[in-house]
Image (tube, rainbow, N blue to C red):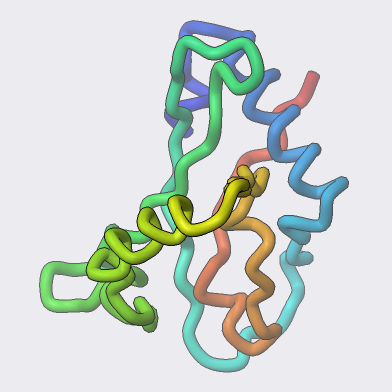
Length: 133
């Protein structure tokens, strides 16, 4: 709603463009309104974040820290975080000195490359109003 109420009409267009790209890349999928719900559903709040960049001046951020009420867990609290890799940073940096070449990579949209099993996708829903042009 805050995007729709924005005084900047370009924001709505840019937001919709990003979501359309997510659909094309199969990062997100539409859920028909008549889809039966098997269990609980959680809707993630989201908002635009802007930065001074030629490639991605705006991106959509999903708030996984939000809670439906003060006594509940957030999605971040409920996810397996994996091992803490901070303790391995020193050994990783030293490996770059062992060989004549080092390789780094930037994975675009890394968060969206993680597939969520179908029965848990109801916890990753988000709403976006269809805005008539």
